[in-house]
Structure formats: C-alpha cells, structure tokens
Amino acid sequence: MAAGAIQTPQILELSGIGNPKLLQSLGISVTHSLPNVGENYIDHFATRMNWRVKDTVTLNEMARGWRLMLAVAEYYARKTGILTLGTGLVHGFVKTDPAMATPDAQYFFVHASYANAAERILDRFPGMTIGVTQLRPESMGSIHIRSTDPLAGPSIRPNFLDSEVDQTCLIRSMQMARRIVSQPAMKQYLHSEMSPGINVQKDEDWLSFARENGQTIYHPIGTCRMGEDDKAVVDLRLKLKGLAGLRVVDASVVPQMVSGNTQAVVMMVAEKAADLVLEDARER
Image 1 (cartoon, rainbow, N blue to C red):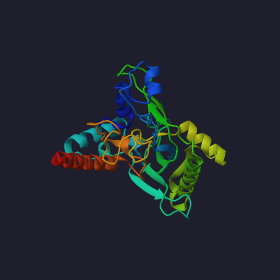
Image 2 (image 1 turned 120 degrees about the vertical axis):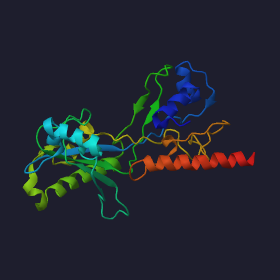
Image 3 (image 1 turned 90 degrees about the vertical axis):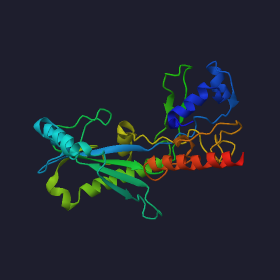
Image 4 (image 1 turned 180 degrees about the vertical axis):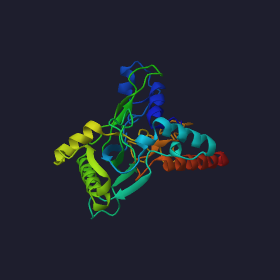
C-alpha cells in the first residue's frame, strides 16, 4: 500500500481492515481487526502573517497585466522568472524558548500577500507574507471512512492546536515574526500589518487568530503508525500487523512529525522498504 496518509487508511478500512466497531457500523465485514488504522493523524499547521509594503515591487504586481505576460514569455523562452518560484523563498528556523536544544518553529517568506489562504488571490497592492508553523506538533487527530463509497472522501479530524504545547509554540513564533519585521532594516519598506493586525496583542487573541486563519501545509503522517507496541499498525519492517503479504510504504507509517517538510522522509521510507522487500525475497 502506498496511497498516502489519507487514502491508505481509507482503502484499508474499505477492505475490512481497521477498527471492528467502525467497520460494522458501516456494514463492512471485518477482514482483520486493527483498531488504530486511521488514528495518530499528525500534520503541520501554519498561520500566515502579511504586511502591506511600499517602495518596492512584489509578486502582487508582477503577476498581473503586462508584467504577467512578460513573465509567461520569459518562462517559455528561458524557463526562468516568477513562474518558477515556490511558495516559500526564504526560510528560518527559530527557538521559541532559548533553553531548547533545537528550533521548534519554522518561517517561510514570500514577497506576495493574499487575504484568504484557501483562495490565494493576490492583493492588488505590494505585500509580503511570513508563514509560521510549529515543527513538531503534539496534537493528534484521525482519518476514517464515513461510508462504503470508495469515491467519498474520509472524515478528517485534525485536532489542530489541541495540545497546550502547540498553542504556546505558535503564539510565541508569531510574536517573534512580528518583532523581526519591526526591526529598523525593514522600516523603510513597511506600510502596515494587515494580518493579524496590530490590535492582536494578547496571547488569547493570537490563539484565536491562529484557530480562525491557520491551515494545514499538507504534511499528513501517522495514520498507519509504525512501532513495536500494541497500538502500532505496521511493524518495524513495515508489515501490517497480524496479516501476511501486505506492507504499507508511505507517510502514514511515520510515528512522529519531523522537523521540516516530509518529502525526504517519504523517499527514505520508500528506499528502506525496497531494501526490506529484497531482503525477504533473498531469504525465501
């Protein structure tokens, strides 16, 4: 199985592998009881702080009108320009507590801004954005099927910011981002803070802003957690516990969140799985 942390548990449950109570409630015959399929869902949650800027040109203007036409031409001619840019151009890793051994929060900066992170429609004036995310969230949710229809999406319950540790980290890292932008070197470029806005000062206001405006950055893991304990779904060789002939090879097996993007981790899991398959084949 390599359908990812969202659809791997969905396919397993549709096949009768999972929590018997859930499966029976949907009229699915239990093929193999594994109560923790779909549990332990962990993801990176991010807020986006943005500012209106001045005396400079940003992607907001460069991605409109005649400038956009020039950018399209540049991309087709040379494969360069703004159409080759990612969503984060400058990154930073910070400690919200100096006593920590390693950073616990990440920033990603881009010279563009939008009012709604879901729609991502660029503002019509110069702007910039700092995305803020906690690196190692403790909050856990679940992903389970809600019907026997394979084309119906599962129920995703992320429980973002359920942990007090997660709440504190995000509040402190957003406050730190504001302090960074308020440094003298940035003064000549700043017009105003748009989101969350200078009226947000108290911890409870920062937390409310995060809850109302934050989003996943699409790093789901853990829904078929690897481990040696009774709650694990796959063993240390990625084999589904108690069921022969099936491995899970995707982000769903990762037991805890890594300090950054999950792409390299998923590639590592795949490489290791390939080695394990070859080892087993040689032993036969």
